[in-house]
Amino acid sequence: MSKTSVEHQHSDTAEVAAGYRAVACKEYPETTIGADYLAEHFISTSHKFLVKFGFVRKLGIVKSRKFTPGGFEYVLARTAFFDQQLLNALGTGAKQLVILGAGFDTRAYRFAEQCSGCKIIELDIASTQNRKKECLLNAGIAIPKNRTFASINFNLESLQDVLREAGYDNAVQTVFLWEGVSMYLQQSAVEATLQFVGACKNTESLLVFDYIATIADSEVDNYYGVKTWRETWARYRQAEPFKFTIDDSQIASYLEGMGLSIKSHLKEREIEERCLPQPGYKHLGRVTGWFRFLTVSPTC
Image 1 (cartoon, rainbow, N blue to C red):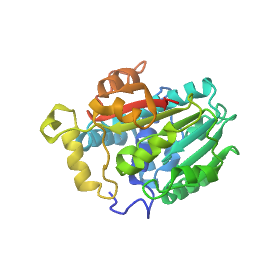
Image 2 (cartoon, helix red, strand yellow):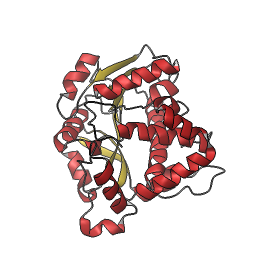
Image 3 (cartoon, one colour):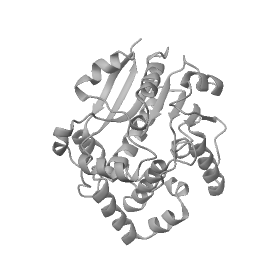
Image 4 (tube, helix red, strand yellow):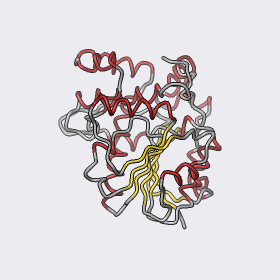
């Protein structure tokens, strides 16, 4: 696992997530958790080889559960949840899609028809974005004319300035997707993003994001998989450490202070119950105890 920062090479965690989605597409075809049929185009040649064979995929899932218990299940559930939230928002009139920290997100391409009436802006660090463009070109995936790439370092640059230059319209009903990003940012960058969305003029706009709940060391054994996750990240993920968490007991007031109101808030058990069950498949496992899903809208 790389120790080089994302400023200098594409995000390892973005590729791991794409790898999980590629595995899910083959292991659970025609399901909401295995819906990302484009994910395989964004992983390395060696990973593509591993994804190709069923017995190797299953060994990979076992290894993932050993080092990051619940992480594989979490990424699959997250794919299903974010997909549905996007489609729901488009169905209620959203005309602008902003993907914050897009990584190897494929929704602008998988849902090109549904998004055809939207302006789409993908934001991410330049190194990951350049890798994504290369993968799209190599795969022969057409980039929709209504989609704009905008590079940003959330920890250093102004989201407002970058989006303005990309043609963002603050008055248009917008769906913001912020998937697998907040935990890697400094608190100031997270709060700047939340405040930006809270200042949207259109109160029908929606931010969909996930976060890690604050868990005291004395409580860590009460949350499935968290202790092992911490150990794995400390040893292997120095380039992309977790920096930000939110106290569950303070979440409503915290977001209210950012100008946002909660529409839905799912903890790990609710994520498992709502997103993982699939027709024809038995219970797929548990989600790591510190992961959460949120949808929020501007209050005024």
